[in-house]
Image 1 (cartoon, helix red, strand yellow):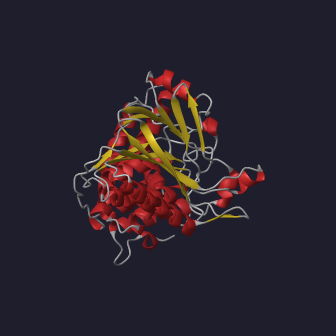
Image 2: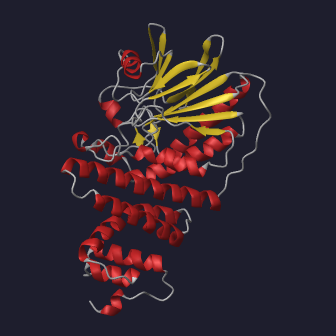
Image 3: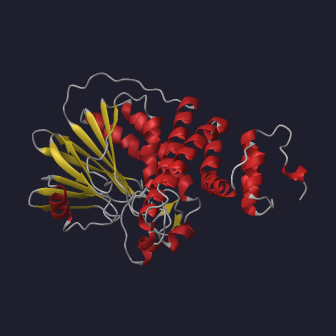
Length: 402
């Protein structure tokens, strides 16, 4: 391979040239060592070890950079800022080099999360600048009623075609839009002042089962970026109809990075992308509060108040309807009056010593796995109205197969 093959092409940006070199080494097109790659791409002379570490960091970020380019993000500015952050993370790794193996594994995991978080936030910031949302403050609401919208089990990129259910990307968009329009309709009817959005998750199909991987067309990153932007558009629409919006979020099982549960770290989840993306994307929405989880280092349980009543929310993969109230109450030392959960793909309610359990059904509906196990349910999501006098006033099951 001659030197000319490695040279920068006419009208090729510095960013595209570097990406071409990295991808060429990844796929074997270019027989180029790490030192030569960084000398050509960045004009720097670094040690082979340093170049190799930086190369693997760039290699890991290629899918995210490609997604950013599809969204008309300024690639050169992202790469420049990302390079600075990457250097800081690498320095932090080196300082911790002599720690024991398990500790180093934890640090590497956190570094990857921080690097990804910073990148996602930069993408959201650039998209916000290139495609801003219009926020229209609404008149002050005289009512003190509050609404709770449960969102869960989208499995956004599944393709389902059986006699019980037909589901694809177009149907997902239709069902999602119906949820938002019906929430506005019911909320306006009850004169809702504050809307609580409970993201119970499983918004993507993920990698945990082979049958799901077969039924899924897009990778997890593409799915989560699509869902995050759809949520952003939905939240801005809701914020233009209700005086206050509060958003809560918990982790799930389908969004985990590793298919093998034993190899998986609960903190490494694609579901984390959602609040990372929404916060900068919607930073100009004055009546939106992205509520931080009050439990230290735990994003699988969320506690919040609705009309001064303690509510808990979990995805449900670690809980059962029969013991979720007892477990969450004892673990958090909080007396709960309502618990919201999902995961089971069907509507259910129960009560334990006065605490009401509300299980949200699935948006996607009956897939092949459910049908093969003779499980079926109606695709729906739930919207509830609360008041200060009696708590939950009513519940709407928003049917999505109509």
